[in-house]
Image (cartoon, rainbow, N blue to C red; front, side, top):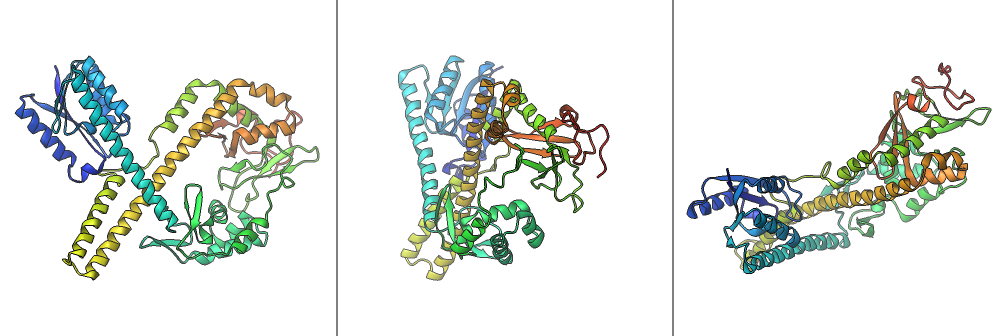
Length: 483
C-alpha cells in the first residue's frame, strides 16, 4: 500500500499567514485537483528548517525508504528544508524510491530531469538565503540592542525588567550589601547566612558587571542604560579582598572540588596527626547532616570515574547524543521567535505609515509603538538565551571530545599511581569538575560530561562516614568513628 503524504512545517515568517491547518487544506485541495487519492498529513510544528533533525521528516524518510509513499505534497519546497544540501539529499532519496514530489506553489517537480533538479536546487538556494538573512537580522537586532545599553537576558537579582529596561527592585539593597560584605573579607557562606541569598547566587552576583551599569552580548560588555548598583571601586574592592590565591590552595589534590550533595557547599579539608586528609562539610550540625569522608576514597572515586569514561564506549556515545540533541533546550509551539519578530516589525512599519498619513493620533501611535517594541525586545532576549544555551552545549561537546581523546591516550590508573601530588593536581584541574558527596553515594563530574554515580563500597567508603581517624590502608575503618 502506497500513500500520498502531505508534509507541513511552520517555523519561518510565512507561518504568520499560513498556519499548519491552512497549509494542509491547500495541499488536500491540490491532491483532489490532481487525483492523488487520500492523504496522510505529517506535521512539524515549531521546528526550524535548518536541518533534518525533525520528528515529522524522520517519519517521512522511514515511509519513503519502506516503499510506502507514492507522492509527497508540500505547500512550498522550503517546507521540506531551508538547507540546500539537505533538500538535495531528500530529492535524491525520493528519486531512488520513485516518489513524486509536488509543491502547491511550484507545481510537480520532475526529479528525473536535469531541469527539475535545477528547479529544486534554485528553490533551496533562495530558502537557505532567506533563513540565513533572518538569523543575521536577529543577531544584528540583538547586537544593536546591547550596544544601545539594553539588557538582553532575564533580569538578574536586584532588578526587574520594566518596559524593556532594568529597574532596581526591593533586593537591590541586598546586592549592595553583598559587595560590601565581600569587600570586608566575608566568605560566600558568611554572606549567604547574612543576607539569605544562596551561595551560588552570591558568587554570580559578585562576578556580574551588570551591577556596574553594563550590559552584555556573549563575551562583550557595553555601557548600559540601567542604574548601576555599585561603583567600579566597590566592585574591585570586593574582588581584591579575596585574591586568587595559590597560597590558599589546600595540600590535597581535590581541594576546592569536593562539594556537599545535601547543602551544595564546597567541603573543607582537615588533617589528622598522620597528615591524612578528611573532607568535612563546615555546615554539619547547622542544617546539614553530611558525614566526613576520607580523601583517599574520594581520590579513588575520581580515578574510577575517569576510567569509566575512558573505557565505556556506550557511555561516550550516550553523552555525545545528549550534548548534540534537544533534551533540555527551550522549545516553541507555533510560530518561532524569528517569525514573530518579523511580523511585529512589519506591524511597526505599518503603524509608522499610518502615523505619517495622520490616520492615528500621536498618542495612540506612541502607546502602540511602545507595546510592539517591548514585545520585540522580549522575544530577542529569549532568542539570546536559546542561542547562549546552544553555544554552551557546543562548548561542552568540544570540551568532552578533548577529554575523551586525552583519556584514550593514557592509562589513567597508572598515571595516577605513578604521579606526584603536583602531577595529580594537574590531572584533576584539567579533567575533574567536582566530586559531590552524598550520604549513600558519590557523583564524579568529569568536565564536559554528565555526573557519574559511584557507590561508596566501590571506593572503600562506608555508609555513616568517619571522623578524622583514617586507616593505614587509606580505607575508612570498619566502624564509623564517633561524630
